[in-house]
Each structure stands twice: as C-alpha cells, then as structure tokens.
Length: 112
Length: 115
Image (cartoon, rainbow over all chains, first blue to last red; front, top):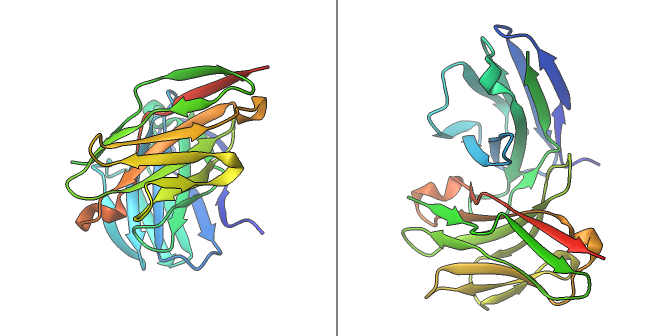
C-alpha cells in the first residue's frame, strides 16, 4: 500500500513539449505539496495545497500549473518544457501544516 | 524568512563510532523541526521531529536529535553508526505562523560510514 504515489517515475521529453505528473495519497491528508530537487540535491518547495486550495506558490514560472481535483490528488502540468526543468519532482502530503510530510518516490524529468 | 543551514556537505565516520549531522535554523517564532533521510534514487523518509516538550527526540533507526533553542540548532545524532546509515540527510523547518504550510529544507549532508 503506497502512501504517496507518483506517475510516471521517469519522464524523458523534448524541449517545448507539455507534460503532466500525477500524484495521489491514500493517507487522508489535507495538505499536499510539490517539491523540485535539482542536480545538486537542493529541495525547493514549489506549491502547497490545503483542502484543494492553493496556499503557497513559490514564484514558480507560469508554465507550471498544479491542479487538485480532490484532497487526495495533486497533479502538476508543465507547459513548454525547457532544459532547466530537468530535475526530480517530489510530491508529498501531510495531515496538518505542522506535522511531518510523507514523500512519493519522485519523478525524474529529463528534457532533451 | 525561514531558513535552514547544514554546514557540512559530507560527514565521514567509521562504523561503530558516534555520528553527528549539524543543523541550524532561522524562523520568526518557535519552529517545528524535522530530519529526513534520502537513499539513492528514493524519496525522502521521515526520521524524527521536534514539536514541543523534551529537547531530545528519538526517531527511527536509532537516530535522535537535540533541540537547542539558544543556539537555534537541531543536530542529528546516533551513538553507533552503521554502514547502512550512509545516505543523504536533510534537516527541515516549519514556522508556526502563517508560513506553516511551507516546509523548508537545508542543503543536505551526505553521511558516509566506512566499514
């Protein structure tokens, strides 16, 4: 029973394409997140949603658009992919804002 | 603004010796503090947290961490390191105010335990 699952695990695509990453959590959590981990392993928060409402948008380019159809899902759509978007993207969830977050296994995005 | 510093890129320790991975933080009020571990090609796994109460918190796999408010530190420790502890360790902080939805991570410290 995977708590936070992301699909796909690997994504290789050409510059200019549009792609989506899906995330689902079966923990009943209210808050979900997207993080980006770059090649130097820095983890940077991109978005935070609480009860399907966008709470945090960390100055992410407009090409990135999260969508939360319900509390258990937070998908990430990326338009016009650029080389610099290559990274590992992690989805996470937490029960409340002050509790620990549980992470998915990551999606390694490679833009060529 | 919240921030977390992990001053060491890498920590090397011999198996069986104690280990310490350092973390200092900066938040406007009292923080929530966390440690995570990341094994190669894996997601982050939660190790332990400090919310309130006893300054020494115990977590998974024999790890513990000590919250020191005066030094704004939350160092991760283990009395006896195992080779299997070799991984990337992240310290993270949440503010208790309006920014509590933001979990901020340090830059990570690679722990290498040699046999």
